[in-house]
Amino acid sequence: MTPEPEPGSATEASGVSRPLADWVRAAQRGDPDAFERLVRACDRGVLRLAWNMLRSVEEAQEVYQETFLRAYRNLHSFRADSDFQTWLYRIASNVCLDYLRKRKTRREATLGAPSDDGARQPLDLAVEARPEADPQRLLLNRMIADRIRHALDQLTPRERLVFELRHFHGMRLKQIGQIVGASEEAAKTCLFRATQKLRAALADLVQQRSPGSAGGQHEL
Image (cartoon, rainbow, N blue to C red; front, side, top):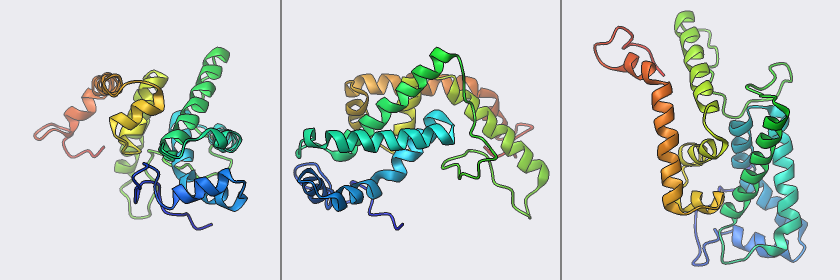
């Protein structure tokens, strides 16, 4: 399936990207093909968000399906003067947070995706093996990737979500605030808190990269 152009490539005065604006209006009139186009335009971002938040292929797929099911059921309530991507990401974020709350209640932490299900992990931080790769460097990079994943897992769900939207999806703080239901300033404060926690957790890795250090040749 060939993906459609990413949202936000060309924006109308209404704030809805072309041709998303036309597809939204057509889908609201009951055109199933138009809604399929909306799904294809946004599915990669939603799946990546779900994977990075949950680190479970199975749960990420469930979030993906639930997000678009809710979007379809509630499309009539979407206002044409709003940004469709923001609206959709708000749904996806709420579904992800629901899964995290349920996981906490069950006291079951899924820290990684199953390795034997054959599914492609959308944004795995681990480095893929290459025939020409230095085995020691490859092992080191995998250890560093594990450290980064563990540090991200120590953030609160809200901090993780804000950090994810800012650094992996490139969203502005105002849009992030709209997605998480907070002001731009509150989103900025949350992002700062998350960044400080990550810097503290990964301080030794940063030192290894500094010039003149014993591990200066290591790559993150």
